[in-house]
Image (cartoon, rainbow, N blue to C red; front, side, top):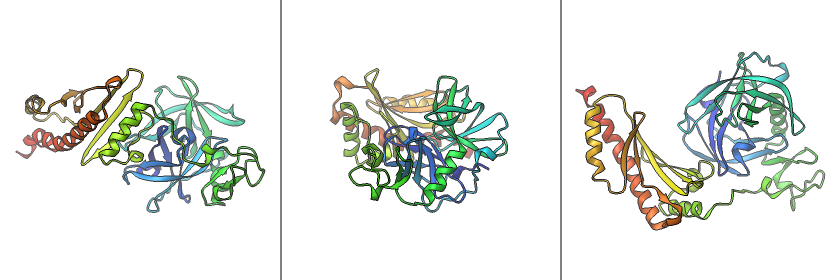
Length: 351
């Protein structure tokens, strides 16, 4: 059975997504769509907090990536050859989100042998249109059928069948070192044996982005945001949530910063707390009073969630010193207010 410890939320400089682990294999399985060309990514789930870990294998031919796994994590979740698995409709796709919650989606395989990049893929009908790269696809017998890759169009996405995953797992386990599959000869080669970017087996060139850490080119505004966060003492590799999106953990608070490049502004906010219906009037009064005391920041309530937000920062007027000041204030106050509001709304329970 799928358990919390089997599925991980993965973030890189390129994207976010999901990966999973299986019995007897000590690495996390995900896709190139999640990792991009990063050689270090951040993993987390309900059992462990954020960990910065290495990418240990890239199989670019079929879009598969393996990531190192902390030694304390083990799994009892089995993978078998897809051709032996019975595909009973519908299937389930399991993923996790940035809140470390496992989310299950129902989908239907419409084609077991859809051709893409010379590999048979699963063509899967899916109604929710959510980004689910790296999600494990499981049939009704709890057998791994494949891994979700990317949307083919708004109604269909591709999945890599389990037989290819299992083949790469078995071959990589014979190497047990940081390595890549040569795009030309398809041999798995250790990075330590690759000289001047040439495959030691066939002498074909292996591109830099498969061997070295490579992140997307940042815009000037993105660079300024990251510089401000570094000055405040935060590790950028742990903060990135894909492109133009950052997550900061301060005490018990989580703060998000997003650069909306299309609309040319930066938004920073924290979901301070979710309201439970208790002492609603007292909470509202408290927020109204505090709104007059917190300077440029402001409280708001949306869908029973209390948000603390910084004012929009427009990229044309970006000032690194102001951004640093407003971020610092937001981080500090988000951590300060979550416990206070929780105590106010739970006062009737203790009474």
